[in-house]
Amino acid sequence: MKTKRLMFMLAICLALPATAMRAGELLLTNRCPMCSLMSEPPDHYTDKSLYQLESQWTTDAGKPIKLGELAGKPQVVLMFFSRCTTACPILMNDLKRISAALTPEQRAKVGFTMVSFDTEHDTPAALAEYRRAWELPADNWTLLNGKPDDVLELAALLGVKYKQDANGQFAHSNVISVLNARGEIAYQQTGLNADVDETVQTLAKLVKN
Image 1 (spheres, rainbow, N blue to C red):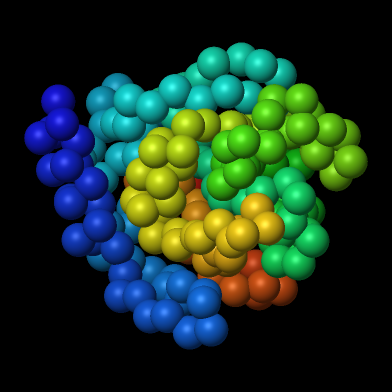
Image 2 (cartoon, rainbow, N blue to C red):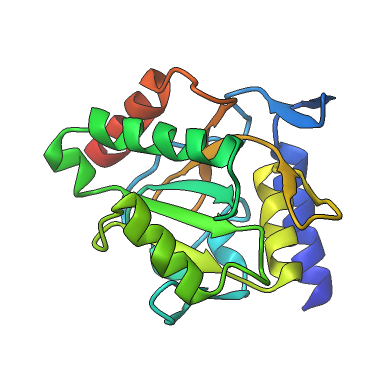
């Protein structure tokens, strides 16, 4: 099982776009060789699908969940932490701009998934409070807490770099990922206050197919 997991991670990481470090932030090109615009409900996963991960997560409602349960619709994925007062609020606004730019019909076919770096403090209760504070709808927004190793694994597969400092804060890449219905990376938006047009166009194609 360990060999299979390592092979899966290698397949994903080799397909990720070129990266560079600057001022502690991971920079990614928006397109990657593994990108796909397939959106039909999955009956199996390819070797590029994040939904092959066997890790178990907990929602803000206290429900155990595997990432594969998100399959069937495109997902907009952000890794964050609730106590962040700098980049994460801006990224949250970016997510809301993406949601607002979709038509009501498109929005109903898209999920938004937020995964916390802070496994210790972002308990289901803390994430539930974060949902209330940001007024995130329960029908298509999923907030997840996971084990440290599982968070690290997912971050690596998404090309997200993070590091916790002595004060418990996290320096991290600013990346919003779009997954197709099979859990494959279709597009990645990088930076803060970025133009969301291509992200929205990608989602529109995914829900149309």
